[in-house]
Image 1: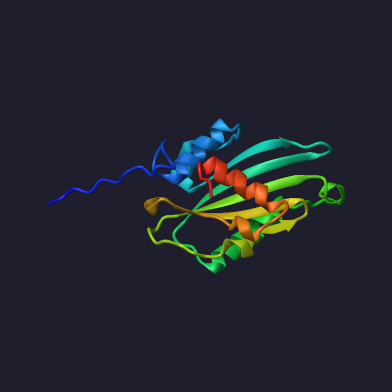
Image 2: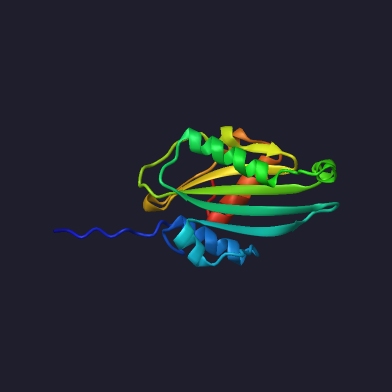
Length: 172
């Protein structure tokens, strides 16, 4: 009987698990987390964040990793609405400054099934109250990372998607 061995993809020399690769790159790029690795293993969620230096106000880039058993439009819509509510400006002062502030939240939904996904994620990008929500679907079992199409987004979205591609070691 022939034994099949998975090979590391050429674009990911550090390993074949896209979640581990991205977590490692976030740590290298100055992101911090208050939770340890055991949170990801035990609870299926971990948050990495980094303060951004902007000319006038403050900014933040956040990566939320959430383990989910499956991905569908309902899950994408609910997570989009929930995360945007959490990170949007709430007080009158925050709302007034929200045009100067920039909080970018990448919500990485890590699917435990090995099924490929092809949901159009561009429909779920949301910008509200100084916060920009970008969904990302990761299926480690088949080394799939799905994020909104760069060509469909211009302006403030394109650099954010390209930064994600840089962290993943992808150039599309």
